[in-house]
Image (cartoon, rainbow, N blue to C red; front, side):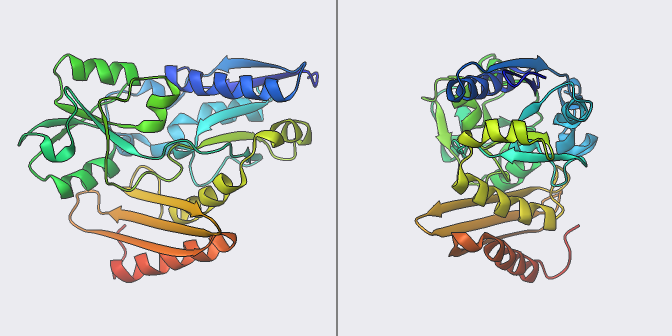
Length: 300
């Protein structure tokens, strides 16, 4: 294809289209004369809307068809939410760059601005995430957690129609869609690995594409992403286990914490470590050592 044109593969949801469009605009701004064309690809995760992701295949459901398009050279690059990307990429593909992370927090949105503590007993809370549900149940075991799938607009509409008393969403997605955050209250739970981060995937060895992408790469985001994904991979993370991993760099130090539970919530562990950001792999391995010690026996 001409160096002046790239085809970007993306899911068709409003959020995916918004974040892909924003990335395409930023890439075009860095390379005058470059045209980035978006191509919508329907994924299995978009087709299946009536079950928890943990029941139907996990993270890969949102990237499989897009990766197939990359391998067939129908698209040149793909924009994913990093939290949707499995620990193992399809052979022949790589995460070319990590743009700067946005908000990582999960937020509670209620009909009126309420914190988790202010929800009444037996309030109906909508979420499709086992990780969110089990962490919140530890804090408020009296709440009723119910399945909530669909795009962000659909979820917000169901809340406003009274189907739920509150819902849980990722703050980054709301911000990227320009949704009013006045009702959003940050939740004190460990985020999903990669939450708030975009992953730009390309064919391994495609130097032309990688050189064009390079100006939008953010080193600190790559560092925490690699650490989070190292922990995720070692703990068998997908959507089958309720796993949260979050890293944060301040100066030359990195904090890294993780939460892991049995799917039925009967057991859980949570640990945090601090170390040199330049040695992110050692920080991740120390966290894994503490997690394994706390677990005693394998959770899987």
